Image (cartoon, rainbow, N blue to C red; front, side, top):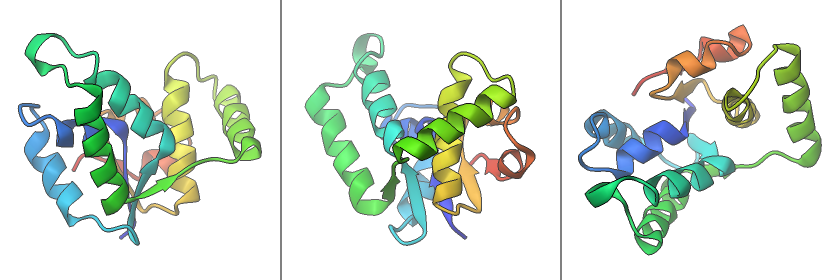
Length: 141
């Protein structure tokens, strides 16, 4: 099975006190670069979120970068070409996707590019508005 990791799962993997940490890290530790991947955009999302968490949960940039290096060692990182990016945005517009859900559409486009059978996410609901072939692949770890 080709697995794809959404930003929400990667963040939960990084944060030891996150409510979804245990199932996230278990899925992550089973991953390998030939059968698992994530979107390049997810690296930025994890960095942005982890460095802006409130109080004691906030991580320093260098700490997050160490984690992201382990992500890059364990799973493949998929990026869209400019044409693929525009195509994904056109598809989102056709589905009447607005606001931040467009980021999930871009992540889903990366999952399709990676030929993922399963998209791990803790935001399953966010992906339900996307095309049926994508929505049915999304599940929690």
